[in-house]
Length: 478
Image (cartoon, rainbow, N blue to C red; front, side):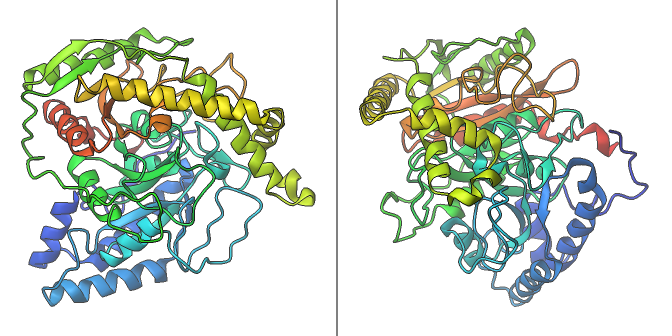
């Protein structure tokens, strides 16, 4: 599939602006939230057909939000640092007045009545909801494709996947559909797409961003931001982490937006670097490994004390994760009326069969193993502030495949670097580190201790300052 760059790409003059640049323009009157929203809607219509990352646009809805923001800016009373800022929302999160299909044939196009808490926080902050982005059904894949919306492609190479399950969010950002996107991460679903599309994405620690109603994926799955810059993600995280009294797991300690992100000070940070993160790696790509290694001298140059050390796990993290993955799929099948189960994604149904074979003792054993893994990680982070290593073992692969060649669609053991941190509940992020010879982006993962989002952001910003790869646009844009 090829695309020729339009003579005049809609919104090209404003689509790469950061949150601060947009709101500075609103403040001075040089920019209007309404004009920005209109330009980005036109951009979506021009570019999305090539990548298929947008699943819902409601121009009247978006422009009504933008017009309300314009009134506030003209009165000098913006609601927050995100007032008037366009944001896309992954279609696993509820937006009042928009459908929530979750990439599933089970759900129709009727609008839902209530925002999910993180969406409500952005609405209260005056953000402008630009569109909803594609996801595989229930976020169940490492790629973004569904029976409802088809295959989503990577703007850096249209034959490749943008990753998943927040691949619609990452592809939208890579094309300039706003400065930030809301994603979610239950096994790597923010970090994987960020790594595959030259973006920054952070999975907050469990409990940092409130959620409601309770979900079967808790505590593995959390929502979080993707962005082109670290600072934009930090601003969004500050907004979406504000309290929700109905969430029983919400932390009572608010997120503190780092004041030094422009020029972060990481001198004295104790950082462990691990090329495998203590995991078994059946797939190895020397080019990706070499790029991840390049983060080490950048962190040293920024003042950090970096030591090579692998975390030691009491059990392979894949062992309990496989149980949680299979039983979650089984619960999805059992929670669906028998006559409607054929509508479920075949992957969910096939993995659900394995989940049905997990007995109570097997599930309890997996719970014990998860606790042992979390305890081992806590002990490791008594000696280190951060752990740095790979996000994915290989670059982006064919968009039509669920997994790389040689693996079955239900396999997760080929990409072991992300899901351990969902089981421990720790924050983790992906920051761009380079491109392969074929032009495919590669990310490096930064993991922090519980409550350590600010330290992750500082270290990521140090890498971003040394290597501002977010300025490199997809080839399809010319």
